[in-house]
Length: 258
Image (tube, rainbow, N blue to C red; front, side):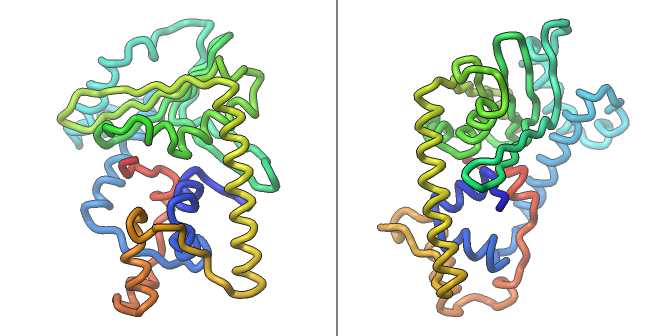
C-alpha cells in the first residue's frame, strides 16, 4: 500500500474522511476559486523546475505577470540557494521512496540542496505563511519529508533541515526552517508505526466486516470534516456531490494552507 503525507494528515485528522476519499472515492467538489489557486500553484512549481533544468521561461512568464513577479521576488530573496559552487548540488522535483512497515512512502522535494555535510529540503508554498509554526512542524509533510531523507541517505538527522518558502503575492517571500535531530527522528518513527498500525486495524474491519472507519473522540468540536460527513451519512447533500472524484493534484501538491 502506498501512502503520502497528505493521506497521513487526513488519517490522523479524520479517519472517516480518509475512507470516503481513498477507499470509497467520494469527495466534495473543488470550488472554482480552489481550482484557480491549485492551477497557479502547479504552474509556479513547474516553472521553478524548468528554471532549475536551464529551460527558458521568458515566453511563459510574459503571459502571466503575477507568476513573473512571484518568481523574481523569490529569486531575489534566496540568492544563497542559487549560488554556483562545485561542492553544492541541487535537484528539482527530487523523488525518494521508502519501504516502511509494509507501506510504500514516496516524497517529492521541490528542491533538494546537497552539500558534503548537510542536506536541505526546500518546499515552495503558494499561500501565506501560517501563524502557527508548531502546527506546521507537526504536519506530516514536514515530518515525513525529514524522516525519509534520514532513512534513505547517509546523512545524520542533525545534518538535515527543511525550509518552506511562502511566495503568496503581494507579500514578500518568507521562510520557515526546521532543523532535524535524532530525538525527532525516533518520535516520528514511533508515531508513524502507531498510525500505520491503526490504519491496518481500520482496514481489516472495513474489508472483513464492512465496518466504517471510526470517528475520533470529540471530533464534533475539532474535526473540519465532521459536518459534511454527517450530512452525507444522512443523505442531506446532493448525490452528485458524493460521486465527485477527488483530483490527484490536491493530494500530491497540496497547495492548501497547513
